[in-house]
Length: 108
Image 1 (cartoon, rainbow, N blue to C red):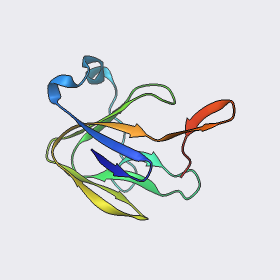
Image 2 (cartoon, rainbow, N blue to C red):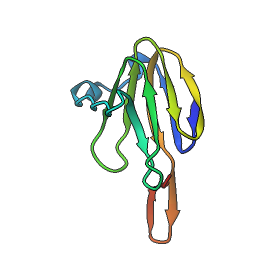
Image 3 (cartoon, rainbow, N blue to C red):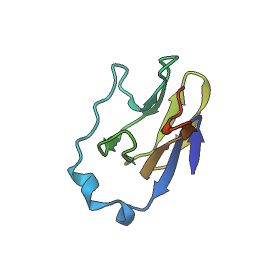
């Protein structure tokens, strides 16, 4: 597993990727050509992947995200060291927190 701040990337074998993922639209890259895993609501900084690949998100606030890196890549962020990722599939998990009466994504 790989973690950068409030984002966790869990390697998943290709045969374990749910079939529904193939039907999800690939997320567009940002203006800098990165795949944004999580955007900081406060700072505007982003946990993002540099390198060839695709990011697909299931609908909903807590929907799973799936990252495919055919040649590997790097997760970058303005305030963290870059993390190299080997080629393969990853389930991207955002950290959540409990506040009285609700569960929400951790704000960056």
